[in-house]
Image 1 (tube, one colour):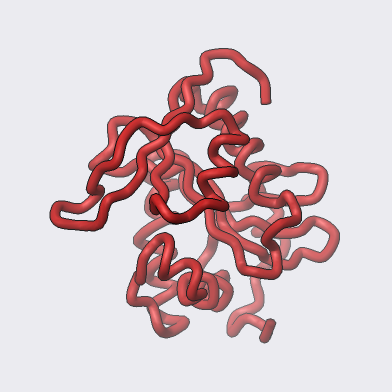
Image 2 (cartoon, rainbow, N blue to C red):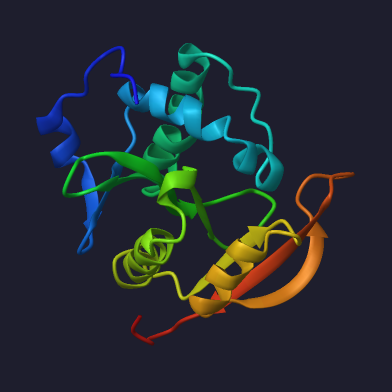
Length: 189
């Protein structure tokens, strides 16, 4: 991957680490992560399963981060986090809890670059996020929305203890989206 336009302040990034697992660090995004996010948002799998965010430049990606995850940290105290391999510091995706106006509860969101698929990273990061949401933020119910045809994400959600609720439209007139929920008052992951 090409170097970022503005190299991140590693000390600042370390202070912004929210969660660590055996192989991963999840930290708050900064605008310096725009180049990686530009790539992630334009992966064919992201566009097919999550949607086209219309982000085509590094500047637009920085705006996406500022208006999305970074704004969510300020407004809700949580959001999507950058997922990095601890051994290399290489960013591989995003995972976190999102508060959407259309949903009554927070929902689990995640996306990864293809080279990170099928290595257990998505489960490892999501399980850590769910524990954090329960233990630190007090969420006992978490939702997830997924394209009905995204079999890989559905398997992951079921492995994490989510159950199908219904098909719904997140945006009026939009495509059907599968809504899943996980109620977790005290169970450990």
